[in-house]
Length: 147
Image (tube, rainbow, N blue to C red; front, side, top):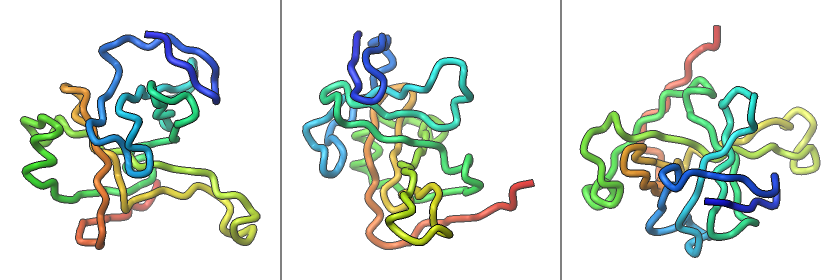
């Protein structure tokens, strides 16, 4: 399938690589199909989650472990069913990251900002995903020293 992105132009993505988000993403409910893309030849640490339905909708995502964080939270029975999740190890967690502009804060705060209050959960086998909005911090967040 050929997809178009305002960030990188056109790309060919295999149909079996498209991830369906049945409920869309909060604020982007009209977008249900996404592809994870990364630049050819580069390390796949940060991906572009590109909407197949709208070329203007794309998010930079990475695994929380890439940021030195072990991130655990519960899923409801309805979320497990929506994901068609059979085993916990089939779930992949990602967080949306964005580069913070110096104008948004002081120079000391310029860097990457990750959204841990609304992680993405993807069943890699069924290619289904959801964005889990966490209204209160009741999950476990463990920071590890990078060594």
